Amino acid sequence: MNKVIFCLIAPFLMITFFSCTEERDCSEGPDISEIDQQQLNQDVDAIDDYLQENDIDYSIDPSGLRYSIVEPGTGNTPTYCSSVLVDYEGRILGEDQTFDSGTDAQFRMSGGIITGWKFGLKLMNKGADYRLFIPSVLAYGEEGVVRSDSSVVIPPNANLEFRIRLNQY
View (cartoon, rainbow, N blue to C red):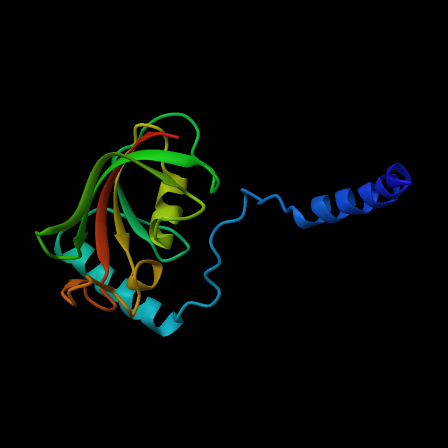
């Protein structure tokens, strides 16, 4: 009797299990349809002014990200599901002080990094070295980053500059 019940229930369990598993489409990038367009426009204007004032050659990604290629790299680019190994240094745009840095830091493109990084890393080849100029809405937005002791690391609506070298993916 137990075998009969198992044979009847097993197919339903398998159907339930496999219908609940969803494979992520690595070709899809971050959804930015809900971002504040007015803030994005303000961010982009401020970044463009900074880049022009400092005579920095740059390219424009449709997301609003600006980037400057220091070294192009070779080969393919990572997908949004790749795991990347990078050297990086981050600053608030126009400031000298580094708020974060890492060497051979590993991140998954599908999570754990700001949206501006996802768009920027997707442009880079292995060995590439870029400067990313990231609008606040593609970074930490209106919340910024505050430590547990209430000290502000990144103020609200701060545009950021990251120097990133893509070592591996």
